[in-house]
Length: 127
Image (cartoon, rainbow, N blue to C red; front, top):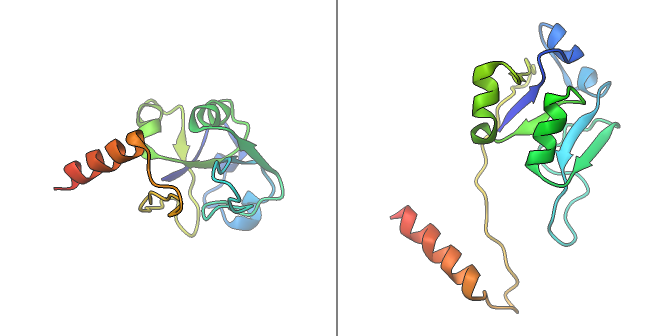
């Protein structure tokens, strides 16, 4: 994940950015789709101006329009980074984050056919 903005965003005019500066701007985040999901995710930067979007496509579009800043998966914005349409923010504590996704389901409800196929596909790729 990379913390990015459009090149014309005011945060890009700074040599380095800290959380205090981030809180002065709109933070773009993707809504947690899990039931009872946390109010703020681990990558939310704490801005009081938090705008939640439904998916990464919408978030990318908002970033390209310089609406705010946000974390994006590198593979979804690779072309935008190469073209300069999006630029990594110079965050003092680091503008890159790596995490391992987890597949979660209720133990009381076994996976359906699609879920089992998905897990089998993941397991096959891991071999």
